[in-house]
Length: 470
Image (cartoon, rainbow, N blue to C red; front, side, top):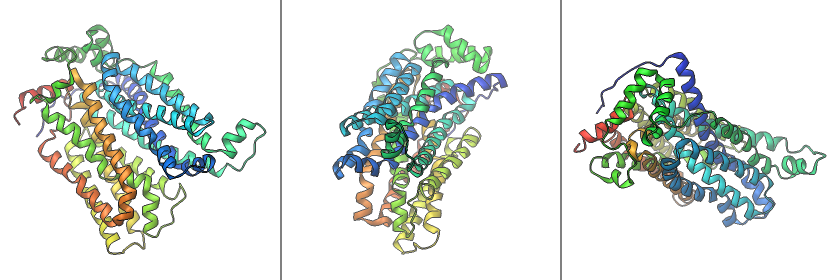
């Protein structure tokens, strides 16, 4: 099922402006990835310094998730009321406060508090950054631009692994300054967590030089400002066409979330809830965070960051480029079909290898990397693209928050249940269950998700109104 397209070009000058704005917004994804992954290198060190039991250790790792859920829950309403840019500024401040606070925390309670603050920032950025990019980018480049968010996220994960490894390897140096000695030598976890302040500060400064979302401005009746921004992106003629299309919509004012539950948009709601959830229950975070443990069960000794986590992270980055360069050429559905099929097949094969005891040699690692690669060009970026473009203008912020909350619920379930499944069911059944859980995404792509390549957000909204019985 495909929505007809209207292709147009963007000049080189306008393209530079577009890339600059989308790059700044994508830094929210970088901070999301960095803050999420940096925790892996600090667990043992924090546990030792604060003498944590297993319950406290689990709370240290998972407390940011509570902040994420609260952040996502508030971000939709705030971004609809105060603007996408202003809420992104709030997220940058939260990241900055969290990084500095964690670096200088003098008690475990203070450390948890600042991790919760960081979780708020993650929750806000995970929703508003792709939303802002989708509303800013022209239709024929929207998939690529939103995929930049996922790319930045994967780069943030890899950089966190690299910096953790570097700081750990160089922690033997002794410094004259007592503060530096504590941060870089005796309690190096402080440097690992505090390093996030650098990109957070860059993100905060850059946000002051980018404009507000033009569609949010139109929603608020600020047509002149919106036209100026759209003209910079696509030229005067196309800007006027975009504004006219927006005005012709039935719902051009803010609407309650209940609009999403009407028959017209119910299909979009199901896509927005199911696709993010299924993207998480495939077990991507289980592989990223519990990868060393899984590989250890297969006979590997990949405990060093550069041996295990960084390898997985680099594959994640490289194959995200596949989506960036193809999502607006091939479309959303082909990438999802190919990628999700590869994810399911890889999971089944990995489980079978464990079940048959074929754990020597490179096969387990190769198919784990195949799983990561398939996720990286499909589920990872395309999920953000789809949920950022399928909702109507009047409630896009609130609806995007709901979809992102579904993603975090799936994330939470996988994070909490994976250790239990590995211990009680074993690796084979763990991977088979992941395959079973995410397989419905193939049906969802085939029967429910329309092809939105090259369509304006207004055209997609008109499609739902004209096909709500489909």
